[in-house]
Image (cartoon, rainbow, N blue to C red):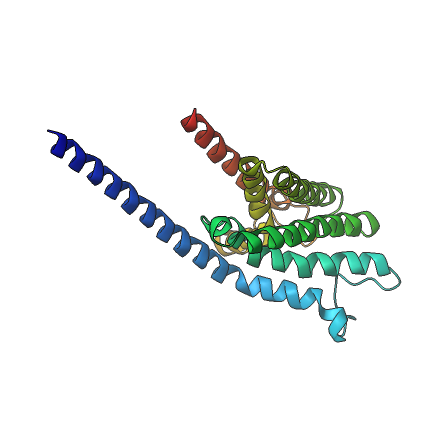
Length: 237
């Protein structure tokens, strides 16, 4: 009987290990595909953000405003550092990275949290000084997005400093979701135009779809994450 119980325990451990490996492989594949799909946007955002440093012609750049140096600095740093967030934050939340390379995780986390604060403040500064093409509702939606980026980055860093790593990870996951927001915004439009030809969307971004999009490129994903985190907490009780 003891031998049978011991064998059963080993089988259970084997099944648990196999399940963990499958989940890890699925996570690798999922994140890999997501990053590959986002790479063209990352490249565009990075090259656009560093354009002024490379002497690129900004005459036809719709984000550039002559005589508004602070607004230009804000939006171009927002774009360049935002590209970096999309590339490196997924590695920060990867299972096991903190245990295997704690030094890298710690210092890169500080860099990324600082970058997140700059990205959010850059967007907020640009909105305050120049506004968005879509007017008041786009200003509101994008300003809330920028504020959430700043809050999540700051909270992730704060809880890491106090060694509250479980809470730190939750804020890091929120920052991860938000870091893909600009890309998801464009994905939504691409899929919508492909499916409908642009119904309820206007050049001035004041159509019904445009108004929904001001919040839909990040809030539903954050809510989905919050539901997942709530379910994990409920299961652990």
